[in-house]
Length: 162
Length: 332
Image (tube, rainbow over all chains, first blue to last red; front, side, top):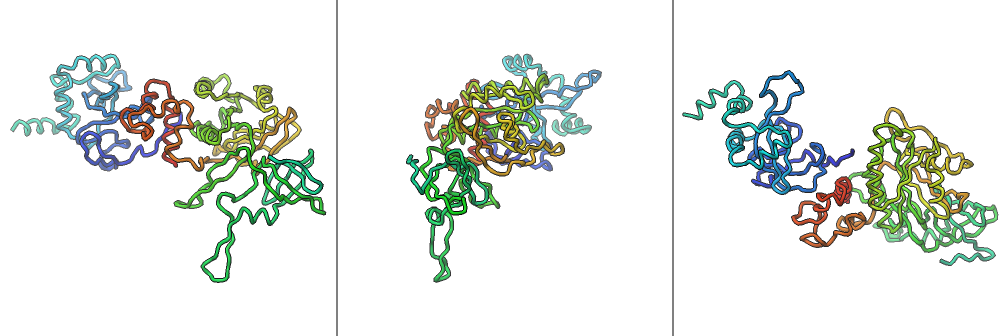
């Protein structure tokens, strides 16, 4: 299916926080920048496949939680896979999973993890229907920290506690 | 339209044009004509140049080539058997494209493809080369803007028959049929759909448009085997056509009417339309225009309360057609 890829990798100004966002791969570490690194909000512009830009909704997508990308290896251990950000369209409620970029604000990511399962049974249900397993702060905090900060996660936690 | 013949002046229809020479058909005879100096002057503008005492004559942009295939012209016969076109009759309609830009920033002008036509036939191959549906939308918008009905023809159906690509193709066909465009599926090899196409073309002046290699000339050869027009296979390395047909020509059909074969084009720019007007020429978008929150000022892109975007989300408008609309609007 042909799709309209014009301006797919253009710099943009975030509709949510108004910050200028560069799409340079050198900055973000990802080829396709799809959310603001400062507030982690995205836009509902894809319909069938990532990057197809066929969506007509074009509303903001708020970050609602974190999940892990399903591994193709069926023998892979639990909690294995790349950390992903779950977005939900504020207008139509569509859910999408996006890669985390290198310059995404880690504190906001941890805040999302903290709030993702609080009083949000509706979103949890929607995620369950779509087969998305949201990470919980209680059981996955260390996992998220180690994904974000690598082996220095423990040091980071200690520094944060000081 | 005044088409009476006199003893010296004849009325004919332009069937072919090449490098300033036109083949004009009159009483089933073809006369090779050139353009009279007077008519050429009528379509030209003369102005003073910066150099005093020198005049510069240039052809008005609107009439880079004042005569198009399908035009009714009045001509006289010269002693050597050729003719000279003296007058051009007003056109019932025409279809044109935007000329290619010779360099970035250069302006384009209108290139008339054919005149006095009854229907436009956008031709697309089921495979080899892969159909570009966005380009089809461009042809359809161009035809709509000139008020000419379109009938889509899919060629080389034998290449996808029984393959997974057939299902995908049928989805696209159903989409265009649901909008109201008739689609005829053909194959020059198996003769599928040719009888249906012959009925559609009978007593009509039709123009075939499409990119190089889709099988426009092969279709013409299959419809009228006597023509024996030159065709080539698609380049296997690039998957693109070889631009075998390099001039415009009209061919009379046995069942009445005529078919205009055109060279394939890689790009098809729609000429003379404002970006605000484009939506009117999408038949499924047109009914909801004016229902947006910002009325007719809505760009149908990011505006809140847009009825067109709502139509896409409701499934009344195809997202692919909406994307074509946005893309076409951006290009203007």
